Image 1 (cartoon, rainbow, N blue to C red):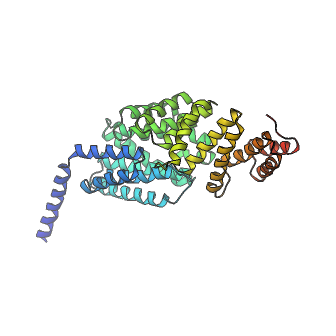
Image 2: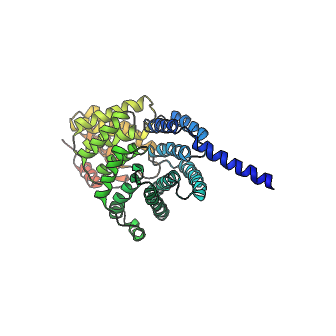
Image 3: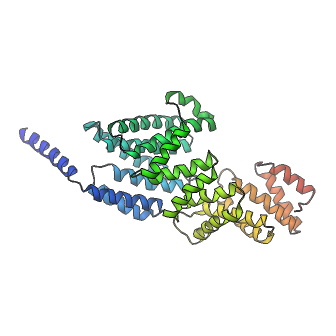
Length: 382
């Protein structure tokens, strides 16, 4: 028995010494390289990098966490596809379990708190996207408490402010946008979107591991909720300067110009997305190609170049029919209606009528039914 105890103690000491003797400079270098590969949509390279991290730093949760982040970005580029959800949840569960084992031995281990909080936060994000609000709220509550605890132990860790920023911003904004969330907010601290933006900005400039993620959040929330195109574009430029082949960053950057009806600028971005999609570049899937062809068609339509607009709208229509499995997208509804208008302009009344009738078979969007019925009676003229 004494021998077993001796060897157990020896093993624990050895593990502790080996952990202390980790080359943390190499660790940080590998993690930063892998993170950049994720945002650069070099997923295969990132997988290899974090395989090294998990092997060489087997008692640290960073490798497991960032391997889950590779899956997260695969999901993010094709949100309607839920085939990777289970894999993502399982990867996060592995990371959470590892962090729990560490925290059972040392409840003040900042890294374990940080990566467990991050895992819960990202799991909550996907659950919210899938509108599983109750489970998302539970993840958010537990993850937030860990972030606060981590900050108390090490207030100099700027990365934890990503969690603060996301929470403070969305805790005010999301309940206003999604009424289903409001009942859960009584269990949470009050949100403050202005404070959240400031915290995210601090991480965006000074973060260690989460700098890019914070910039990405700022680009999206300033576009989607604040409708501040200039500020969203500022962060988009910074992101694209480092990651020019990230379609997610490109899309939001291009949409800031669409929102301002500045198609001459928007089209520069969407033409680049279209070309990259046609060349099969990683991440530039059919969803990005569909959106790019739609805006290319819109640009030619506004320039009254019906022939060219027709080419791209027909491409967008084909892609929409392939992608829209259950509910027709706004892209399909608008494209079908615009095709009717374009064929009317070109004097091809039979085809125009076909598309107007088809518009009436799709759900109504922005008075599409009313206008289609109008043009069925009286041909559209520019």
